[in-house]
Length: 135
Image (cartoon, rainbow, N blue to C red; front, side, top):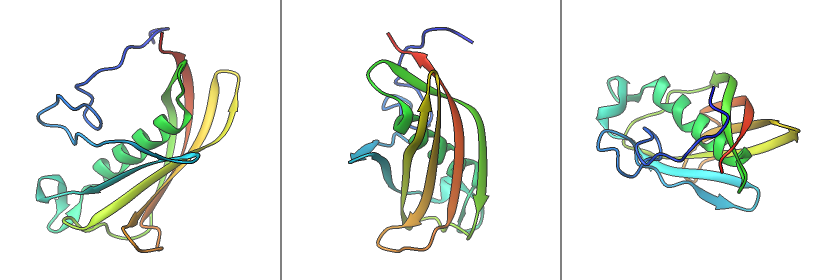
């Protein structure tokens, strides 16, 4: 793995120049990062249901941003995901993530997916991230 990483505007999840990507905007609320998005049928696995791989990508991204800072990018080392309920396409979801702990060059984070204005957790994840210098 490279010891230094550069940002890429073609990232599948957050890259604003990737015509096939999700082009999400990562927002911040205190110590959390979050994504607000409604996914269309392009991202379905089954009819009307968002593909689990897309949901994992969103949770991975929001956790990576949660552990990253001005000096380090969080790179996924391991990820555990639990799907609780079906996530319907066309409905707005909130993907939130926050850092749980940082030790030297490692960090742990968690993420959750909910429908906007609802409390039920649809999916959740915990991840371990290697912190790599970004400069």
